[in-house]
Length: 269
Image (cartoon, rainbow, N blue to C red; front, side, top):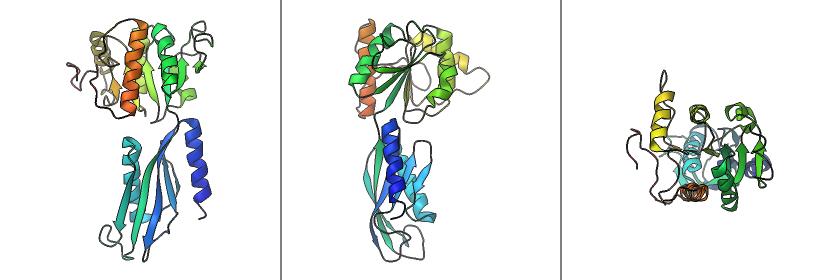
């Protein structure tokens, strides 16, 4: 298979970088088919493709499955009768194994304050690569965040260096409501797995109303504001435990209650 090595090299690079994607492998082919067993197609979290499973209608159907797998993370086997299912004249049959490819996820924390200082080590222990972004050099230090990458910059100004992808988890926890607002308005309109915004329901509602002025709200389906699970407590450590518990629950598709507001931004879920 001439495309085997490039596909596997790119998949390995995704894992090393903490990014994600989905891969299809032809595990069976009979009759007249555009590819043979062993052919692979990789879809990255930036919608790039590497390799091929045959092109045309076959590949279009497999790409739909890869997009779904990239979102839900559930592996499955896909069986296609090329004539009956896709209307192809070759009439062969193919089977594909569809699986998610994922490295250690990245959590980007905007703000280096008391809560961030507690969240970072907990998230690291829970299996996240942690990056902290804050323009206050004294707070965004190796002493306070020994296991995290640090970017000393205003959060939105760090956008190019961060290069946020669909695989990234974002937590907004800065020292200024206006910076929080700019973060949500900017990063909420791009790709991400999750955005959490620390603050009261009143603060969240005010921010949502302000960023909606003059333009549509960003997609709120992956925005968790207020952030965390309802475990009680208000200390930085307790808030951090609530936040990291939410990250782990979502990563594992666990059905748990959240503090976030619903789409109408008026009542908790």
